[in-house]
Image: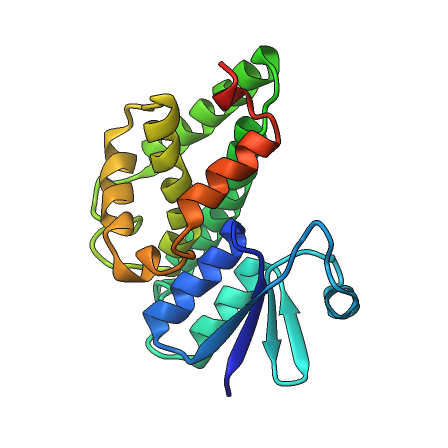
Length: 214
């Protein structure tokens, strides 16, 4: 069955599902909406009125972690570890990755020096916690690409752009190795629209991000 993802062009959570679909080679299409002015049909099918939404025939799924679990289950082999404890830990760190994305969003949307520094401090602390957890392998679980990796690739793509735009380097070698491996993957590179970097920068400038007024 063909799947349809409903998204907007800058959503990191939808990007997670696009990476998973590309890794699995599952047939899908993606539809973009303006999240600032969503159409009524989207409001009708999205209980939380946010993306991602996955249309599976007449059924609808929401929340990226749930969507990715579904995609993983319907297309083999699984991108989850087989060990139940490791699988549970991966799910926990996927949730942590969601919180990190929100911290990163608050940081880039900071509009004054105080909020910028507060959010940067929080971002650094969470990234350091993640760094301390990693084994130093190519991916989160070592050399095997897993569903947890799809959860962090959108974060790393955005952090790499911030490094270029604001000279931000968090000096975290294990994360840097992991990030480089993920950003080199074709599925990650093709998970965003061609104009992604430009659209991301334009959105931040339009929001008067402190990154671009210092």
